[in-house]
Image (cartoon, rainbow, N blue to C red; front, side, top):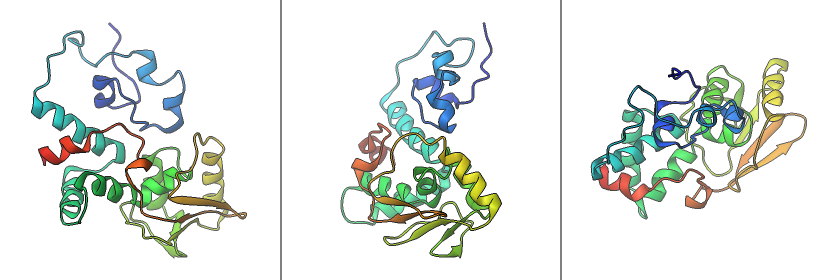
Length: 206
């Protein structure tokens, strides 16, 4: 039996669900799910029925993996969502969508959220003209996300944008005036979230 050496996480392989953690590679035949759509391990043919807790936990893990947040970070976002008026699940999604690394990826500056985090940490992105190296930075309406005006930064982002697939979400607008930039137009809502996740199960779990 072939060993699992694919580029996606065990969660993706187990559930047969693409989280697009590897950017454009997930859209090609090289994706591990396309090559071998079975869970990893020697006993991958045997799947036990998930309990209610297992189903709830799987939904939470999908959301964490999709945005690349750790358990402690996720708990913080959930606590903020519970203190906000309105639907807790939708508020949680909105808070995660407002992360700077997510918006940088959504604009196409990074092929994946992991690459977007690297661009931010290495100083290639500015917010409102100021240097920001915190991937979890929460954007506000009216913020301007711009690529730093230096050859290395522009070269990296333009190479990524040449391989961009899909459209920019409605809550941001992309402007190409020589230096790529995006404007954060409004707060995201549940219609802007593309991953099929049942937030009610996450609320019940947490």
